[in-house]
Amino acid sequence: MNTKTRNISHLIEGIATKDGAGVNLTRIIGSPELNMLDPFLLLDEFGSENPNDYIAGFPPHPHRGFETITYMLNGKFTHKDSAGNEGHLSDGGVQWMTAGKGVVHSEMPEQSEGLMRGFQLWLNLPKEKKMIDPSYHDIQADKIPSVLLENAKVKVISGEFQSTEGPGRPHTGVLYLDVHLNKSSSISIPINENWNAFIYVYEGDIESNLSVPKGNLAVLDRDGIFECRSISSDTKFILAAGEPLNEPVARGGPFVMNTKGEVLQAFDDYQSGKLG
Ligand code: FE2
Image (tube, rainbow, N blue to C red; front, side, top):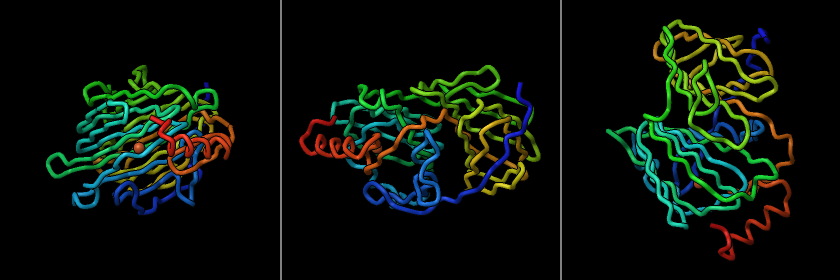
């Protein structure tokens, strides 16, 4: 068993941007500073106490070639697509959407008791799965198991932590955890060898080989166990780790394929109504 500690290699702060119909968000992966962390293509944090920052939501738009994982910390989320599928999430729920060969959908966030906050993570599909049929998996909060430790709670969205398996069903290996630590508490998280991994601290501050303040993403090294300690009360971070695909990536807005030609084909298919 590997007992090496997996260090943080560097920190990244997200950039403020807008997407959809003018939704204010922070783009953390998919920005000039960190274009991708194979197999993760994008990570956005959205959330505001001001509904004007997001109320117009994400009206109908296409996707092809990857999966989107939307985790609502607070608030609600309604999803509809051109094939008539509809899904609703509320506080603490996750929508796992496999765009595969294509969907045209809308995503509309809503407040619960004045709060709306969450993450959307884009997970690439391997070449042989980019054109599979689209599917959705709405996972309500009570279906996401938590591992309770003396000074920590770990929600397992995908993959396994301390023999508890999450409900997410990725097409490649993915660990996705939401970790809550009490003040001055430590945790050790084993991660598969050679998987790319990051944490994003969304409440409080943690320290490992480097300190990571709230609102920072820490890219981790590729082997060993990740260990950290909270340095504030009510510290929360997400951790995602995935098996790198090591395939060429051609991005064109909402389409992520292996070649430029395949991206152009996706635009053509969308224009001619063959997508979704
Ligand atoms: Fe979308």
